[in-house]
Length: 186
Image (cartoon, rainbow, N blue to C red):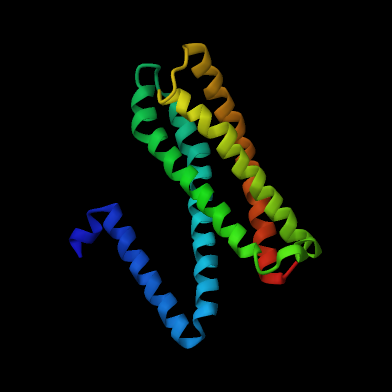
């Protein structure tokens, strides 16, 4: 047990295995089609939880830490925290979008009859676009993956702060819309 708890990867794998056991039990208790649909929904919710968690972490912890440290200390946070956080954040955004699109397949062109779901989908797409087209390119500038002058890095940092805050504003109404749409059929 200690070896599992000493590694985030092994602990995550153990949690994944336990989750798969639950899905297998559901598959036996219902049918494999229902279990598959629940697996996709579970993956969507999990990816969204990770994405939302990182939105909060970036806004509440990471940006505050970057603001508080000196210019000499900033590269350490950028290299060891901001870069890896951005990779997980972006991966969670992509996974949320992909599983969300899969979840919309069965309802197809009737989605327009569910205005709250449609609002949540549109809000989620806006949030994903912010990650894909604004935050990710700016993170590559400040982490040095793309060459950028000091002026460009400063502009990238300012853009990241602005758009991270916009995502923070959007996360609550989008989450509320999605939860109500999923549970009330609206």
